[in-house]
Structure formats: C-alpha cells, structure tokens
Length: 260
Length: 290
Image (cartoon, rainbow over all chains, first blue to last red; front, side, top):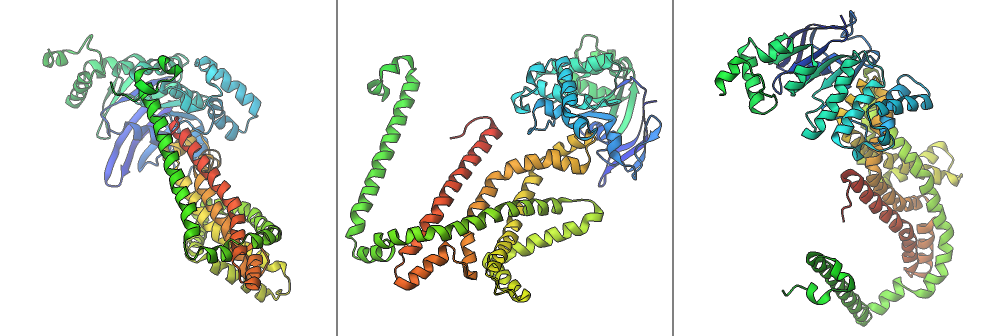
C-alpha cells in the first residue's frame, strides 16, 4: 500500500473540514476526489502533503506514519509532488530555474546536471523552447505543465494534483490532461481533485465523492459516476451535468428520468 | 465632418485611419497648449519678480552671484564628506534592515527572543527623531568612552545613529515586501521539500526585495539629505561649512549653494526611483502605463 489515511480529521476553528477520512491508495493507482467546492478535496491533498497539520488520525506513506507531529516534514514532502490550481510558479525564476530549484537546493546537486535534466523534462512536455522564458510569458496551460515538471524533477513517489485545470481556459485544459495521462501510463501513483468528471472517469481507478468532509461514496468510476447509490452523489452529479462538466452520452437511468 | 484631422492631415495621414489621424491631431494640440501656457507663466514670473519691491534685498541675501561663485568651490570638499557618510551608511542600513525584517518574521519558538528584539528595535528606533539619535550617540558615547578628543569619533557615532534610525524604517519596508509575497509561493516551495530557511532565501526574499526597491530608494533619498544632520556634532561637512561662512558675512547665499549641492544628488536619485517604479509597474502588468 502506497498511501493510507486512517480517520483523518482536520478542523479550522470550530469548522470540521475533514471528518474521519479513510483512504487507501495502492502503488500505481489513480484516485480522483470529486465533490462540491468546500467539500474538503483541497484540504485533504494539503494534509497529505503535510502543508496542513491534521487534528486526528494517521497518514502512512509506505506503511510509515508521516503525520506524527514531531516528525520533520521536509524529507517527507520531497517524496510527494504537489501541483496547485493556480500553478504557483516562482515568477522571479525562468522556467528551467523553476524546475531546477528543488533538485539544486534540496538535493544539493550540480547546476549543469540539474539543468540538463530539466531541459530533458521540458522537451518531453513539449516546452523545450520556453526554457529560458519567465513564467508570465507563458499561457496558463504551459504554466501548469511547467508546474507539473517542477514537481516531477524531484522524482516523487506520489503526485497530488489539486484541481489543476480549474484556472485554465477551456481550450488549454487538454494539453494539461495529456500530461496526466502520460503520468498514468508511466505508472505514477496519483491523487487528484477535479471538476472534470469525464476526465475522472477516464483516468482514475477509483473515484471518491466527498461531501462535508466525509467520503460518502467510493469505487470504480463506472459505479460512482454512472450508478451512484447515495442521494447526495446523485444531486451533485446532476448539478455537474447541468453545468456542462460531464457529457451525457450514457447518462445513468436515474438522471435520464429527471432530465428528459 | 469638422474633425481636426481633416485640416491637419500630414503626408503620412493617408495611411492612417480617420480615428488615428484625429487622435494624432489631438495629441499635437495638447503639446502646443502645454508649451504655450508654460511659456506664459514662466515669462510672467521672470518679468514680475524683479519688479517686486523687496527683490533686490532677497537677491542680495540669498542669490548673490559673487558670494556663490567664491563659496561654491569651498563647499565641494565638505560635501564630499556628506557623500562619504551616505556611501558607507547606505549599505549598512540595507543589510541591517533586511536582517531585522527577517528576524521579525522568524516563527521558530527558540528564536522568539530574536523576534521580540527586532520588534522592539523597530518600535523604539522609529519613535524617536533622527536628530535626537544623532545627539544622543554623537555626544553621549564619546563622552562615555572619554574619547572626546578624537575628532573622527563624531563622524563614526553620527553614522551609527543614522544607521540605527534608518535601519528601523528600512526594516519595515522589507517586512512589508516579505508579507506581500503570497502564501501560495511558500506552499509551492515547501511542497518541493525546501526548508523554511531555504524558502525564505530562494523564493520569498528575491521577490520581496524586487518589490520594495522603489520605496527603499525613497528612504535613501531622504537619508542623503539627513546626512547633513551630522553637522550638529561639529564635523565640517557642507552644511557646517556654509553656516560658518554665513555667520562670518551675514549673507545667506552659502546656504543656497549647499542646497544646490544636495539637489545635484537628490534629484537624479528621485528620477531614478521614478524610473524604477515605472519599470516595476510595467513588469507587474506586462504593459506600459503612461
């Protein structure tokens, strides 16, 4: 088991954002987190990356409890790559410097070797010609691909993707999702929060529906997205379809009845 | 059509659109109006000022050409003193200010005293007039050390006072810059595995410092003038030299000459600040704002 969450609780003041989350992620498995805004998807990812301390429960990476409060989080974070909704590239560094920063500072590796690797990574993402540009010269899709490359440069065991296409213009979503498809083919373990239901269906082995900080329903995408058992899940998917975020090529019977 | 463009169109006008020609004509017209009104006002001043009754006395007391000509070369040496004080104070102020700003931002519990001291330092140093720091340190410390005889001591302690006072202001500028770097930048750096120190050095500070260059320049411009405050301790810098001359001849032209010298440095510095500000704004928005 790559990643295990046991009864994870996170509170912001009185508000319980994550309410006893249990989740197992196998090596090479892709898990999609879906749910309305504020259901706790982002917080869950931030907790896994130890960017937020949890209030109860345990998080295990390869069977090793990484959530112990006395543990130094820096070496743990190096083993996980996180990609953010708003890219969060470093604006004062060029594309290649963004990618090289982690290996240079954290792994203390030589500049030339790191740069060569970063250029290679950019080439594979189709961004070789942007290496020496600053991030603000790039389109949103290109920036997000650089952000993915920046995480990959640290050679992570797990990738955490936090709504990585939500800030993009519709025509730029595809190029970013292509990169994620490539990662899946390479066998990367991934946990991703997404609003793109059709993408979740295509890429994930398992879909988890979060509602008010709980995993209300989880299973293969064909079950959760096409034949949800929980009423809350149905309501959510109905709204998603109304918003045009999921194709209605083969809508589940329940949904077809309601929207003729 | 009664558009201005119809009668102002030049040879290239045919290639421009009707709107462009109209806008070009309007721009030419505003330049013309600005030039005309400026010429009128300046002309009026030049014509009226010498006619006013007290002008002769004012000119003799403040703008005596002969006095100016004789004192100006004598002020250059002392002014170099001012410049020197500025030149060694400025880097010290920037370094100390940055150190204090970072100290104020440390979150490690073990370093809480650093945070406390930095906060207190800023509060105390900024709450006291600069001239008071200069007298306090400039007269006080040499008296304490019984080194009054040492002439250079005044300059040293005057400089220390300037460095203390200004590093408080500069620290606040740096702190504002550090806090203006968005939390998500820190999150991105930490998620790569950078420690908090590495995040500060490689991600936060480079962005923060770039953002605060214009306000820092403002502080440096004002430091360049406040250097003259050291004159109260006795060293013969430009202001001191001028007042010696004034008390001898009872003509105020030497003060004006000293002022001209300070302006020679502060105006270019101010323009440089404006230029940097504008460049910063361009970089932020990606387009030129005029």
